[in-house]
Image (cartoon, rainbow, N blue to C red; front, side):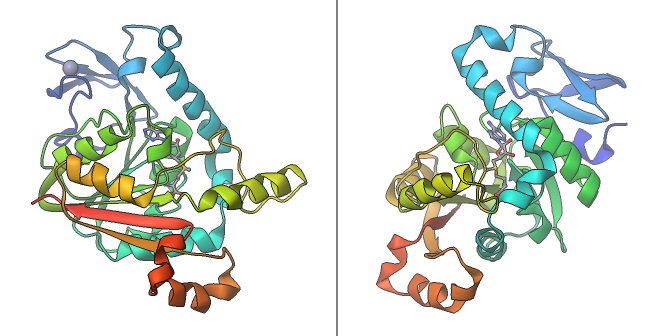
Length: 283
Ligand SMILES: C[S@@+](CC[C@H](N)C(=O)[O-])C[C@H]1O[C@@H](n2cnc3c(N)ncnc32)[C@H](O)[C@@H]1O
Ligand SMILES: [Zn+2]
């Protein structure tokens, strides 16, 4: 059964028109005619999977398909391999700027989601069906399999859009921000977290240790580049956001050094942090 809470807010990711729910197994766009399947009651609102063109025929779709497969394979075990201290610090900073009705983009197995649930209404999306299954069952929230680059939601639906560690995987990273801007209400906030350029050296050590058996903090997503903070700020502004802010988090990824990390975060050295949280308002 489709979660009734979703029917009022979803739309066709391609043409953004209404979807018709006549049969238990699919949603149909009454404008472009694309048919989107429902798998275990979860809408799969991916243009590539709407039965027009086979995904393997396009290079961009092939890239997405590979990412989807990588994260489908991780499922809930992703949470066991990501660094717990880094995750809890990201959750803490993101929580400071969220409110109201929240869309979480690229929820994974709920690493950030679990910090958003109290008093908030959360809809979670991910390109990986496995991740959406895990999160919607674990937290009893509405989940949709969807692409950050083509959000299947009507304009002005959410108060906050949250996205942790997702923007690197996109063909057109700015589309996450322009799509977030579109689905936000007036005065709504988009907040994302990324690993900064300073992460690159940590990543080399992490990969070296990972190949020698270290599990925590290591997962192989075949990706090894990221953005500078100033690039992200610019991307937020180009998408239309105002009051764009950035906070550096975590210098040394050890919970025992928490107080030291927090001291540095408040100092002029904050730009040397390995994690960044960036947010802006739709005025
Ligand atoms: C590194 S994990 C981050 C998980 C969690 N948000 C966190 O902060 O730890 C990246 C997640 O983004 C999802 N993802 C990758 N490309 C996506 C896309 N185009 N649209 C939606 N989700 C995507 C992956 O399936 C994966 O669950
Ligand atoms: Zn359509």
